[in-house]
Image 1 (cartoon, rainbow, N blue to C red):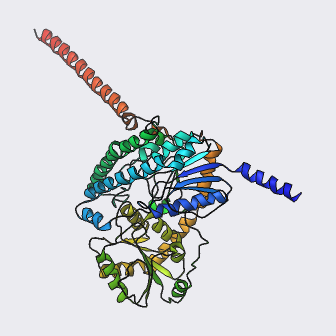
Image 2 (image 1 turned 135 degrees about the vertical axis):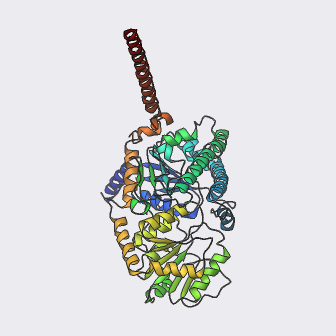
Image 3 (image 1 turned 90 degrees about the vertical axis):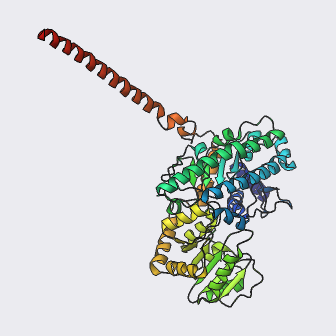
Length: 510
């Protein structure tokens, strides 16, 4: 009898779950952290999940991993010194350099994905999936795999929307109020920043469509010649989940096919397992400042590290610093480690400030925990994230090009002000106050699309609307033509009437 009950329960659990494939071809550890939280939750909810990614995942009964990892590309890193050399010239030069880096990342990720033997075997097997979740970063090659599997798709991004993603979602990317992805233009840019934003967006979109996506298309077609245009496949995704939420990134004009799940990766039950770290935190009577510049930056500039060291050595505050510096004897007021349980540290009641690069995971964790930020963006969308944090009231900015220990000290004084601390706690409450948690929201929409087999139509008509119709150029042209014709007719009638009147007057005079 017990055996029968167990078999029946297994049948019920299996019948409720969907077969889901996750394709996350970028090797950045921050992206991995964000996506893994969702994948593991789906597996725990008894969905049969297959994931194609780089970093190892925990073993779960309903989870299968196809690893793209190799010696060449175990984890993405960024050469910060090189990026800053472009930043010192202009934001436009930085955006162009970023575009070139994106091409290399996209082509590498695409090539590894479509040529991977296990991925090819998955397609040949004819296995059916209810849904494919495709990372939206710099390559759309995941959509080609979903196409070969004949499965509906949704997108997911571990960051704010990239400029080339707006059009496929039918969302406006108006530089008058949409913060630029690549520099801190904010929601109320001045005239110069609007012009700069237009130039960067047009340039990045052109480069993406005509260089990155074109080269990815060639890579895909070498293996799967019948694959349609990747851009068309991208437009067919049912919806996208994005790592942002309006209390931080401000309200945006999206349709129902864009779902904000900012902070999805934050586990409120995370704890600090390192006893030494926990004791350091608990003993900090005046609070602790946490310092981290993320997992992607491969070489934080030594001048930045030196300014942080000077700040720590002459400060009365305590610090926790995630760093791999080895040629420095840390004083007693700092705890140094190569890795930290960041969300758990930030949510510890003794942590009162965060010196950060403004990566979206770090920024959303600080927002969740109510910890104010000294924002020191380094590359990519970090400038936009930092600006959003400043506008929301949880951060003060520091320019990486002019940073010093005294500037950092002044910024810390600002965020340690009682009013600033109070504001951060208020924003934390707004961040958490949602109908559903970000994880439950993401799971609902994933199950919704799978349940409806991707047939639900959530795309606004603007996705396929021609440029001239979107901006009402056809209407403006017709109205302008009518006005011109009307003016012409009125002038003609007046001219004829005037001529007749003059002729009549002349006859009378004669």
